[in-house]
Image 1 (tube, rainbow, N blue to C red):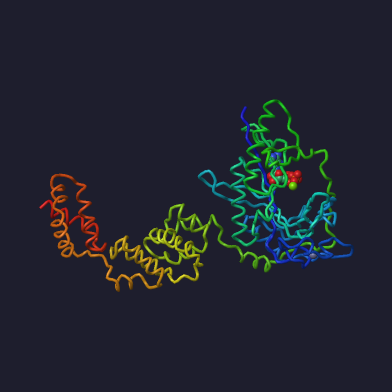
Image 2 (cartoon, rainbow, N blue to C red):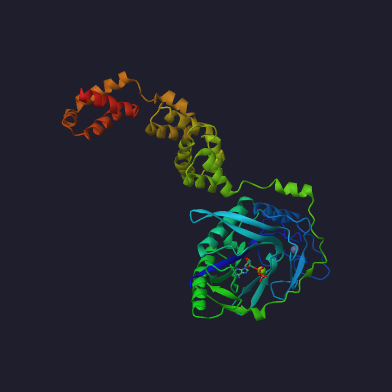
Length: 474
Ligand code: ADP
Ligand code: MG
Ligand code: ZN
């Protein structure tokens, strides 16, 4: 019997807000321990939380981006447990009435599009961080109370690679919309991986095994690459897998049991009495909806459709948004957008990276790149000359047409002028000329090269070849 993997991910993302979720302490990484704290985020008696409105907006914005519905009633609940990094002994979260639910994320995978359903994205708060030293441990509460979004997927993921692509696509969306910086090094994205296996062709879910607290996407992929075959081998041996929580040992490259279902917490959730339910109005929702940006996949598909670009070009102009905007400004309405894309992706990107200049302060304007493409496409200059014109325009900011004019770079397409050059080249190279006449076709390329050189690159290469050939065959 063959088995397949069933995977669902719970992704925790720190929201990009100025302050924490319930107090005015800064939401900042890297400060000295316990400097961004106050009675509220330290859970001292008698304090009252005040919800951070921007965090609510970012949560609902995420809901829009993930095609979720936004209930008109949501609330906060206490999840009770004791752990040293959780100063209140409970975490405020959204239990049965979350702010967003029932959506999906679409992303490119295995040469096509995949869709993973989103169960919900709910708002909660981060905990502090335990630090272990030689002889003692310490808790840093700077992170306690930082707004944290938990994005729960349906078990629609079927492989380690697909989990990896889902996470990257999710990150791209969240970063593009300014919801989170998603800096993995700073622990801004963490993930719990749920995985089971079942015989192919069946629909019942197998025992859910959860790998907790993964902090890199490649770690998630490696953990699944280990865990899926482990489970399949176990069921093939006749073992019955039981629901449990496992930990990923990154150095050893294995997962190991942490706790079984029997020691699962009873969190005794109850509604948070210190916070009002969250009931967004039409006006508030409209304000959030206005912040929905064009998402990376939509953008890539639009560039391919509207500008007939190949997928690779569209990807570059999506990943580098500023370069993409420059391209759009140059290519909109032009008949050969691919030519413009070539200039932007090859020449312009190289100049930008070697000079380190930000794109909005360069002197070469998008209209000039388009003009350059037009000069080549209309046969006014050769593509070789165009390279020199580009260099000149990059430095001086002059318009390509003006450079061509002032330096006399226009391509010579006048047959009379090219005939004169052809006569000179044939006279100066009797050897290759007679080789060609004797049937050595390659000699024509040499003569053509000589003609181009004599014209300083300005002769129309097609015409040069034709005129030479006609004269040699005469
Ligand atoms: P819990 O209540 O224990 O958190 P949930 O039902 O909320 O469990 O599911 C948590 C995550 O686990 C979700 O992402 C879900 O898609 C996934 N999941 C649930 N059951 C399974 C299963 N049998 N195999 C793989 N993933 C699962
Ligand atoms: Mg859960
Ligand atoms: Zn505080």
